Image 1 (cartoon, rainbow, N blue to C red):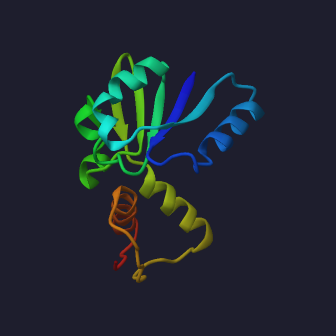
Image 2: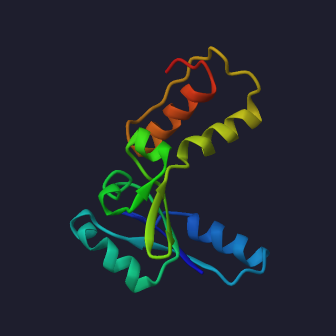
Length: 144
């Protein structure tokens, strides 16, 4: 299977290194690459993905909101925050998910046991911060 992370800029991303090492350690014949797609070329995203024959991809700055009109379906979290960071291609359908928030909260809960009534400062207002804020509010009585 083939996967990628899509963004601009993207050359700094460690995602390909991490995912490819994980695939290798699990003896999976999958690949994961970084694909730079400038804003002015994003209108060609369907063609770019089809040309690369990807099974799915992660989407990052500056395209987390921009990808939504190209998707066939989105999960409730993506709909709630208006941003997508993961796209699964299943039977030709593009399905968008937002895992930023649950990923952040899962990590946070491993370090801090009690966040009820906590005050948390989020710096930023992009797709990732929206997902994180949504999950913090859902799981804790957090004040942002």
